[in-house]
Image: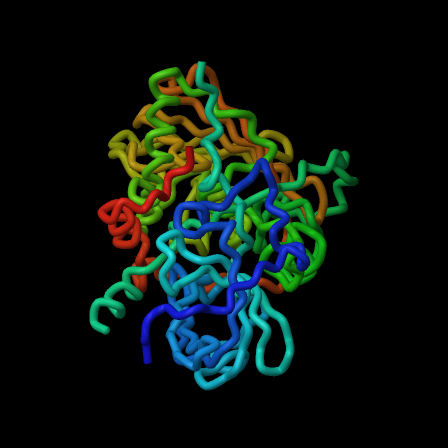
Length: 145
Length: 282
C-alpha cells in the first residue's frame, strides 16, 4: 500500500484565497505544518478516526505512475466537526472518493493538516482550521524591554 | 511498513489547543433597555445559556460561524478562525511581563508543543478556558451559585455568591471562585491557582500569586461583556486587562471532549525535536 513517496500531486491553491494568512495572528499550526507547503490531494478514504482532541482521516492517493501511498490528515475534534455540520458515519466514509486541501507537515512525510474537503457529493466542508492563525505561529504577546 | 505506521501514529497534532485568530473588536453598543435580556426571579440579569467566547457575531452557532462572521469553523474558508486555546483575544493589551518573565514566555513559545499544559490534556486554567471561541461554555445560574460548564477539557466552575474564599485553599488548575453582583454586573474573584497553566496565548505562565477578577455584564439578549483583570506581582509589572465577549448561541449543546482519547501532540513534538526538524519560528 505504501510504496514510498513518489511524486504527489501537490498544487498551490492561492487562487482560492486559502493563503490569505493574517500577518498578526498565526496558528500553532505553524509548529507542525508548513503554510508554505499547501497540498491538494484526491483519493479514497481508508479510515476515519473521530477522536479528541483531534480527528484524523487516511487517504489512499495515486501518483502519476500509479503508485499508491496512504496519507494522514488531521483536523478538528468530533464536537467541533459536529457543529460544522459533519455527520459521523454519513458525511464521509471509508471508500469515498474525496479531494482535500491543506498543508503538509514540516518533516515532509505523508501527513498533513486538512482544511477543506470536497466530498463525493461535491459538497465542500471544513475539516480543520485555516493555516497561519493563532499565537502558536507568532511571537508571544509580551513586552520585552 | 512498521516504521511508517509508527510514524503515522506519531504524526501531528496541534496542541489540543486550537489556535484562534483574529477576533473582531467588541462593538461599542450601549447597554440596551433592561427588558432587552431576561432577568432571574431575584431581578438579576439571567446569564443562563450556552455562549461562545471571542466573538461579536449574533445568531446561532451556525449563523455566526458559517458565513462571513467570526467564521473559521463553518463552510466559508475565508472567514477568520475563532479563538482557540493558543490565542489571546485581539482586544487584550500586550502582556505586561517583567523582563525575565518575558524571556521565559519566549522560551516556552519555542517549545510550545511540549511545554503547553493543554498539549498534555491538563486543565487550561483561567482565563484560557473562558475566552475560547472554538468550544462553547454553558452558564447555569441560581440565586446562590453560578455554574460554568466548559466543553473544552470538560472543565467546570462552581461559583458561590456572596461567599468568602475557603480558608483551606490548596493550589488548583482552575482556582477557587467566589462571586457577587455589583448592580447588573456579576463579579467573580478567583484565587488559589497553581502555577501550571497559561493565562491566554502561548507561553503566558504565571505564579501561584495569580489573582483573576472577572466581570460579566449582559448588555443585551445576545451579548455579555466579559472583562478580565489578571494580577500577578511575581511575573507582571502591572495588571493585565482583557476585554472580550460572550455571545449567546441558542440551540447549541455541549459535546463530549475526552482529550486523552487520542492525544498525539507530545509524542509528535518530541519526535520533531529528536529528529532536528525545525519547528521553531525565529
